[in-house]
Image (cartoon, rainbow, N blue to C red; front, side):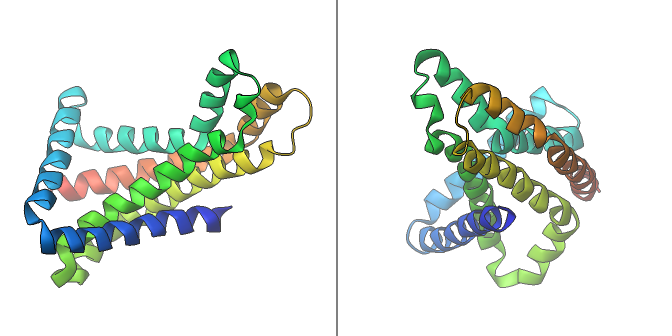
Length: 192
């Protein structure tokens, strides 16, 4: 599942990079507006969590949690209203795939800024990205795996779905550790 997760992430990256190139070429003001949106989002988050390193870690932990277990949470919520619909694999698949694609896409959008300075992009992304990118891909793989394994559930769907989630907590713990290391490195790099 890790390969599928990585393919979705890097598919998002390529989409972000290519769409940015087109937007920069034809609608540069739209690209500027997107960058301003990202900046405002960071500024808004910094008002909630003033420590930049903690903000980075919290943001990435939220994304990893949604990628890993968001589908399970949505299935449990939907189960209240429609138990049959809660078994839908697409319901479990959507959040991990979406988080993977969007995270890759944002990286691609930012990479477009450095088209003329690729070594600078990799130098800026490598230290923390070495930890954060695999953590997000691993988190997505957890969610995709839960989605795939849920198809095999015969009886008590919600109970077995909870067991699938619990069985992946060790993998998620590794993702958390990688996110913390990456967040510390990114926070130090930005603040220095």
